[in-house]
Image (cartoon, rainbow, N blue to C red; front, top):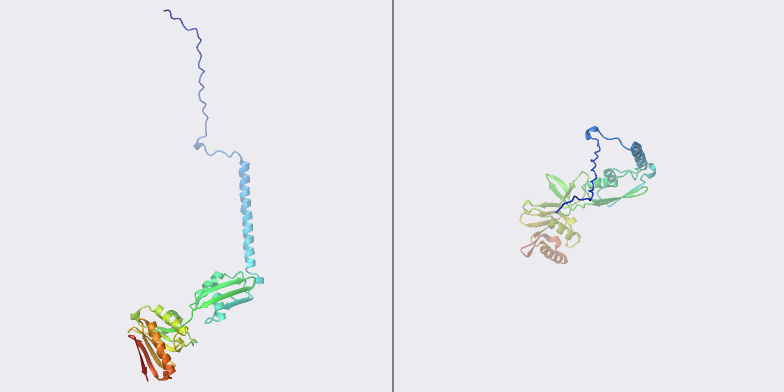
Length: 277
């Protein structure tokens, strides 16, 4: 078999082009220059203009605030104080740092409330501003119910026996002296309940009639009625029931006209005893 060479022409392969390499700037060559230096300059000018405008506005606002908070046109012509009994009007203004003519908007209401709240007689305070020239202060004062003795000094105490403040020269309130034996610990709840009962006239004698109230180490409460010269004793255990019985006995003595002859009434162990002079 004869082999003949193929007469079909061969297709020549196109020559491959060598890749073109771009010479990129190296990092060590330094930063490239901005393509649009005019745009960067405009941005810088806009930023500086904004800062200038804000500065002018800020200065204007500060000046306006100072003008408004100092102008005599907004001076206080009325400072109203209500709810004060222990603190005089002038004392309230002095503690709060207020005076007539002071600029109303220049008064820091929060600071005024904080200053008054620091006073031992103030239990709660609110301050309200009414533009253009009025200020209203409402106080809730702590009410003294007793005197208590500490370190040889007398102090006002509230209806729970909590100290308010020390007596000062000129204080003339007549209150019963409260004494609680250290062995009894904290008796605030009992004291408060007894005071509430006396204040609502649920006993034949009121707190104002007493010279002293003692909680003794023997577990009794002892009351001394100054005007009647009568001692009243009751066990602290179930004291409300004992007080109910004392009230019944007292009512009976009054109907018979014998209260002036009584020296002691005592309720203990479920019994009531009356000792006459």
